[in-house]
Length: 188
Image (cartoon, rainbow, N blue to C red; front, top):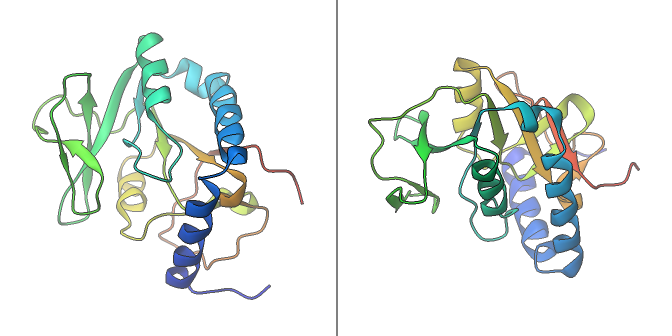
């Protein structure tokens, strides 16, 4: 298998996923992923969940956040900083948000109600592989740094176009794998 470098693979993968997310098949997969997540033992038992506020062409996280609130879980979203660190800040319906330089909505006020780490983090990414539960993120390394400092349970959610059996990108020592990948992808 020919490896692309991470930057090239990431760009190709973002284009592939962006196209796929506009299809009916993507919505069917997302609904199935929600059902699997909501039935997951680690999700059910977690009292605090870290999650991003999804942006266009990502699996929508608001149904997950609403399920957390319905189940009495505390929800925490990341606040990122220029030194590539981040903290998880409590998120509630009235939390004031601002948009980061990456286009992600984050809490404006971040000096109170921090939980590092939440009991479970739903980790975003552009690609995931069963081989080693590897994850390819968006390239800034926030989650790899965070999980190195604050190990906790992690779950990734992947539509079929994000899921690979073997890892087709280079994996480095600092890349942190996830504990579980929830996907509807068929085994190849």
